[in-house]
Length: 479
Image: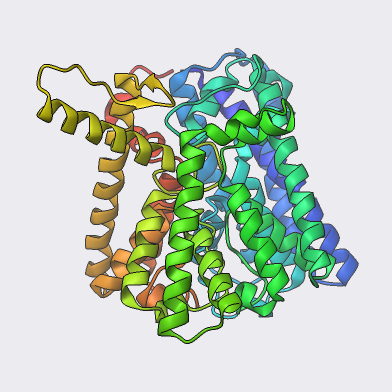
């Protein structure tokens, strides 16, 4: 393990976070708001970043354990440093700040704020920017910007990028990272323009585009997207769905003009889930809540896409929907978006793979002499990938249930505990009961907030990266 190089990378990450706060500082200065919280936060970040100059002798190579350690510690450090403006501004305490910032970086969207509209616009901008940075991955941004990470950068990418496989778009990892961030930025700009065209001002359009493309869900309004026009809500639905698609497919479509992406089984399943559940919920809302066609479909598709992509925006209180529709949404939380997207959950591709395994097992039971292997896109799924997918599902459920036990121990009722645990580990944000779409997490005991902060980070890194750090064997033989 190359600890000196690890420290060097973390120092540069702290510097990068400080630089990213300059935009929020600029907003504060332009609007005449207090700039000191950002100034002091930037000073702290640059002070930590100065360690870069004391690690010049580091060997420029990273291995698997280095990648895991950098990602784990990097996310922990980033969630603390990025929360300093909230603390220095007097808006939150340390635990609440860590929870809110972890929720932002992991694109969860769970909030402890009871009235978000009282915050200065510069603080709200930083809150949204945190989500945007976390959506594609702050360390992936570091790989794109910092040339020396081209050596060993793949180990960081493996530990941070979600999904059962970690593919490069091009041979160089740094170039892959730049392409991904370029696509991400381009679609974000398109989203900003769409929001502005539907009635938002530039700052709120930017705030919401950041949260939409990151599938994060932080809004500048207490009513979330319900505070804006129906056109804005439809645009948001579209861009949330786009953000939930594997960015490898975006690359193939934009750069290679490859229309073959529409035959991808994960994409077809993802779109199918949206269409079927959106129509089912829409028709149900028309009958149960007597909503008109456009309103019912807008509320249905918006919330279905928001939950499936784990964005967490809301334009209607789905906690008041019929119970069976709420159960459908809870199931969508587990599934999440596509692998290689900014969405959370266990990912659609894993659901497809497990389904193919089930069909293969049933076929073997019916025809014992036939050799049947689970396939994906016409190719047999390797045992390693299938094993990883199954273990991911099992560990996801195991950690979630452990969280439910702890949350009930600190005073939450079972429904709220189950919903909060699922919403945080799947990086969704809003759940049902006391953490519904019009509620918040402020009432939860500090111990519960710390637990949920851990589960949000673990869920964003797909559990294994964080869990490996808890095993004593990981730390043996390091120097």
